Image (cartoon, rainbow, N blue to C red):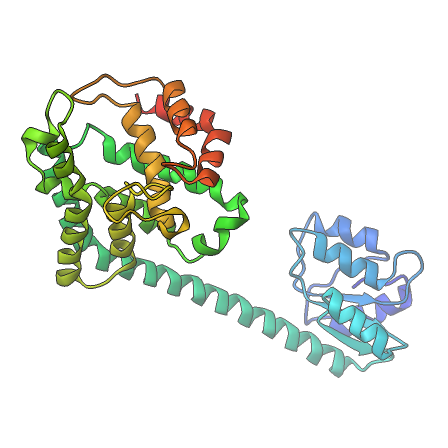
Length: 349
């Protein structure tokens, strides 16, 4: 209880004797000091006090990280609608008008302690339920992920993709997603994504290459036009493979992301990409993100027909193709944080 009236403190102490452990403070400052040592289950607070009044003390309690959730019952001799509304808006739980009976005081305290106990029980139940749901979701996805990991493993063992290509692109996507929330233009769409599933689904972005002949993919020199046309079909092949997976496993957010990644990561901002010649914002965000990440990783990795290029060269190429190959806004974000991509790339060596 916080009150500058010693008689009132003693009166309430007598009323609560044998019912509750009871601490007193003669000012708001004393209460804040007390909160550094213990967190009470409830505060009885006199509204009318010299210096900082009850309203100011409520704000101090609510701004105290440890004690911010403590229920506060205001004690007052002059309750009016304006003060009542102000106190409740600041976070008070209830009012008791002085003078009050012992029975009323005990019932109000009992009521609000019960409410707090129910809140804790509900919160605990909610956390337990979330854990169960997460476990069941993970259990349901695990067989599907096992199949997909096996499929990806087959692609990698055939040498179709450079060593570590999948892990690196996933890592770069994670970094990109960490940078995007500060840009309002992407907040709305990203809020609808399970970003963990999105990054996981990116392992399928080149799955269509499993249908392209190894002699083309592993060719040590430049591809001719016919060979390049065949390679470009991997985007369509990839979407087809994912559609087959969906037919067996059913629709999922994971596979929705995967299909957009597989089919759109070679679309270009100016509409000259493949397989659908999509342009600008018509290219799904998944594809626009992967286009930059995939290009950066490809440029800084060894290929059968060339050695890897340094980070600075990759940045230069991506910058030069902003607004033609790549989404200019996303390119700007990449360029603003290119050093972070360089550090991340160095960590992978």
